Image 1: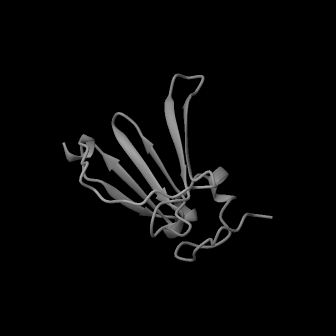
Image 2 (image 1 turned 90 degrees about the vertical axis):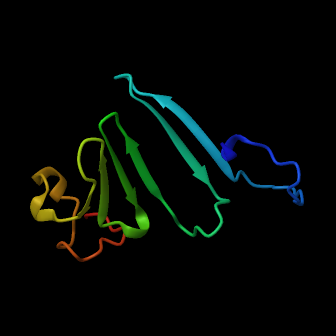
Length: 112
């Protein structure tokens, strides 16, 4: 409930912002899937926090660049899971995009 309340007693100082510091894009794909894409330069404490979250009706996926070898999967009907990137367990088409064995961070490198 507090999220949607307004507190007029809060002290703050207005400052002019000369950059585009936040944006959002709502989209719909050809197959009817809806999505939203957020970009922010004003999240305090974040340095290079690139992440993706895909939410479905039965499961969700979350990936964060700062822990690039991990993928969190959340389920409605069972325990959530945390998977570590392992090329040996990937589809051969996806394996091509991995340069290092499991446990060795990719560090944002692309295959040549």
